[in-house]
Image 1 (cartoon, rainbow, N blue to C red):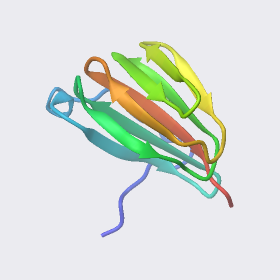
Image 2 (tube, helix red, strand yellow):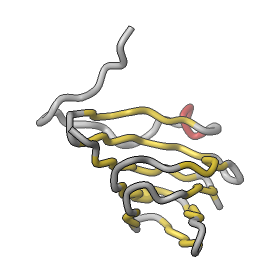
Image 3 (tube, rainbow, N blue to C red):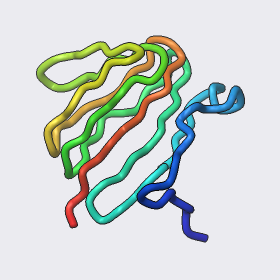
Length: 109
């Protein structure tokens, strides 16, 4: 069965439930030919292993604190902060506390 995504102009609830705060949880919220928006919930001490994506991305910290680890530097972002990464850049994400992230990915059409 295909994953149900929101459509353009739909209102999307970004707040995770208490159940979602227990460990790693991710869901794709919106996916179009050019854009994908995902919610990622990480528990304190959990991580998203090193990886890269083809398009440019933003990682916005909705709650908590994470470290975004790149080959050349490490950036810490907390509630209300955002970082943009270039296309194809290797990175990992390490949760310093329980965290909810909003990840926006530019996709090739």
